Image (tube, rainbow, N blue to C red):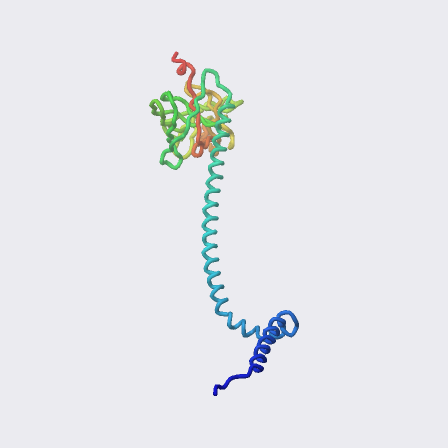
Length: 267
């Protein structure tokens, strides 16, 4: 004889399961269920902790890589921005220099030819420059938008080498506006020395010396140097004068070659 449960017991079992499911479903809606959830919450939290730790660790690792990537991208963007700023400043400076050349008043019997600086000598004071300029001649005068630079020493069809006034081989006759001073400025590598300055006509510190036009090489009226020291020589006849160039050709991108008109016209 096979033993088995009665149909009534099976029916009661199904009803008990059905009632349990209903209680579980209602527990998520009513306060009793909320209390049950609070009761089992620590257990669920402990069971889920390893999963959360793994997720947090992966998130930290991914966040670190993402932050590093963003940092590198920001560094590259900053470098590019700085390069653009420097390029903009350089173009602005060149534009100002070119505008200054265009606004230079023409000196009678001379013409201006703008030239690009392509290199500077290895000396700290850059006593020699290389210009990109056409049809320049030896001993042509070179100026910046501020003051006298020097003379062309060598040239070909497209380029020229310039001796600046700091070169000992360049001597410039100078004077001061409103003065009878007649002196010579010569280069000393680092500074400019002013020779044959009578003590009675010695300039003051800060005075500006300009070309006098004597000798016919340099046009008159070009700023040359600013006086830095004035020392009386023993005997009280002459003064030792030291000056510095006004032109800052170490950073200028454009200079101008001053050409006599008879040389331009071929006369």
